[in-house]
View 1: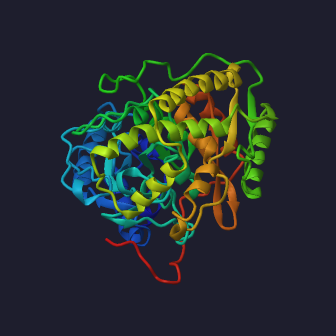
View 2: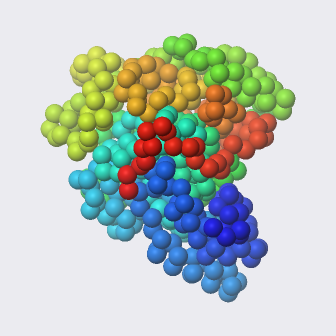
Length: 478
């Protein structure tokens, strides 16, 4: 790799866009730098499953011509980005990690992917996810596992583990993933990067091929958003991706910045949410994040939001009611790990009935009101993403119930449709620690603002070179 390419893959999205706009770098060099980085390290990590080299090079040539001609440039002009395997990218198969969908090639981009393209960003590659995006660890029956670049023996998180690992190692400065129960925030925490799960209705989510429409549980609780190495890059991508789109009837034309909040701003710190089994290292990270906000003149109090454990239980009831019904009429084309995961997850719930499902939706509304009151006046919550450090990859199915419990406040954000930004807050035992900032509906601006304050208190953790191989010498299959 040349000296210039060595530097370019280290840049973030905003830095690349600024350097391209000022003509300090060519888009072609930016793309080559990232392609070389993928070639150099991805055999070890298994984050990237399809490289779009020819298309990216052609797009870079056109982008450099636009710069040379003095054309108006988009906010992400020349910035490469990667797309998770279960999000539609025109002309590229949306395999969702399973062989049965190897030829599922959409003719159109998902709405937010199209917005990134129109802002000048260039699709570079597709990234790994578990079968159908199911699970808190990333292993695909089609492409195999993704490894955590900090320690190849622990999980990179799931289901956006490929995205998080690619961004953490400089293979991409920006990516798109999805989040049904932490699938953006958990991989970001595992790999030491940042992620944004938006409010329900903020970023349009619309598959571009059949079967496109999802059960109500996923309509309400699944969100798609950006991953990056810095909060500033999240914010840049978010402003491009957000907005109403007729293809997603849940979207609303809410302003990106809400009304001013009382000064000083307030934050509730939740080091040990229910069921109160958070590791000491994670609690310390949450309190340190709270201290950073306090130093920036936030009013910081340790106080739990209402009924976190009940919210997680409602998430499980709503998901189980829909998915159990769907699975009576079809067998999903997933592998054994996902089947085992779903069996263990659903075993925690009471058998779904019409009355129980109705009660779950009523509880959701009650919890939304209670959390709305807790977050009144622009208050934000600082909490763990997961109640422990990343677990061993080979033990991802050993205790699904325990993992679910440690993910309680993260899952609560999904069932309530609330925005959350994950940001790294240091390292423990050689692994990154991430916390999340949760806000009220459509107040991503407050989450991003608080996350920026927290981020400023820590040196950047990424990009990094991958850790040495594990003793077995196992590599991701190509």
